[in-house]
Length: 198
Image 1 (tube, rainbow, N blue to C red):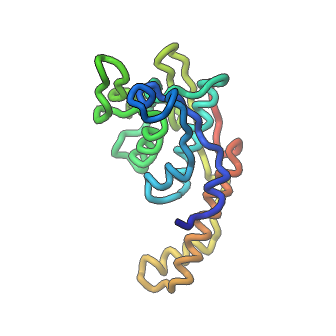
Image 2 (cartoon, rainbow, N blue to C red):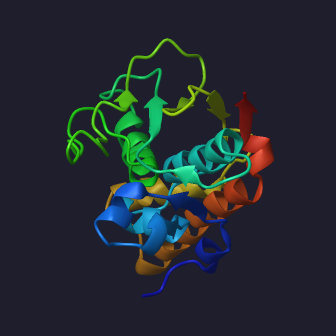
């Protein structure tokens, strides 16, 4: 499996998942979620997928400053509707990381470990996403804006050729490299593209 090397340099998100411990998946429920794993689940790497990963990374570190985030015990809110733009892509990535879902998630074991109804859309927030701990109600809001990190001007021309079926294999490869270069630069400049409000 070949992929851009920078995927491996992105900080992983450390979680503890009580359900995975009870069901014997990970000892102590301890594991990490990497950017590569999120990309594989999404099927692609783009500024939106990177942004969803970044907001979870910085948001959960702020929410759990001295410990691992507790997967399955985090509420997630979005101002967008599920049907808006890329809200579905973003929510899928954040669901993978936090375990939170709207109505489709795990219903629990004996009244514990439920993950459904932890994700809400059309929330009255101004940020990109709001994370709230179930145990103590502490919340953080994360703003994500990658507009300051633009892509190569050549991408538009290459995109038009690809959509018209006129791009060569080398041009398709070049487009992918330029696309991933922007994703790489976004991930290298997390403080520039995010703001966390506690």
